[in-house]
Length: 260
Image 1 (cartoon, one colour):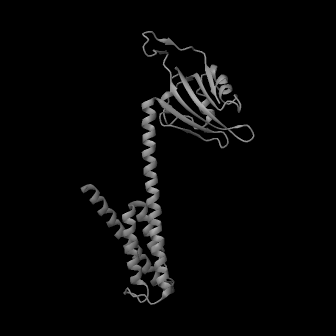
Image 2 (tube, helix red, strand yellow; image 1 turned 90 degrees about the vertical axis):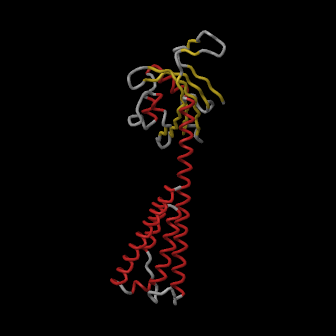
Image 3 (cartoon, helix red, strand yellow; image 1 turned 180 degrees about the vertical axis):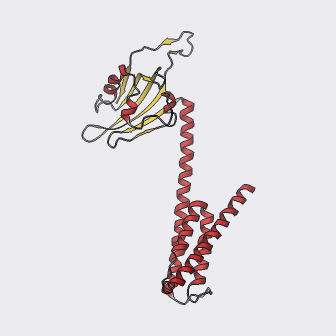
């Protein structure tokens, strides 16, 4: 609680600094161009609101809008008074306050969405690590390739040097299984949208690991594969079924299974 109060105090302090700088810049502008005062140029104050909303959050932005509106009312003719004679100035001040509040709300909504996304991404990352599963998403139309954080780990590679295209990812497939993987996934045609492939991959140190890839194809109107998604998990050389004391050997040959 104490830390939060200190953080709010610091944010409000910087809001005061921003509004003070905007006030000084506006006064300097009016001295350099006196007719500008009659047009009510409040750009510096709006910049202060945007910066406060971006860096400080909702409360800092609302405080900045309130303080800026008071100072604007103070400098609108007649100057050094909160009285406003011109209806146009009243409208300009109301518009400034409304836009400032809108900017504050939109930025607050953006920050909430970012926090929600980060929390969801963190949960997904934990679930994938706990399950030993990694995911990838290849868009064949624009060439983009997305991967979960733990995909490089399964492939024995680092995050920095992992492939950023489907072609680069495909190069990690064992040379003897590449043609099979291609035919089983993309070459299966529109009639096979879901598939599960057991195949080998090459790790960065040259070692081989057997993995299982469960994927889905998204077919376009022309019958071509436009997007592929996959979930990869490692398969040990031996598996022991529940209740069986003897391990079952996994064949070295690649296998595939389809579902409609």
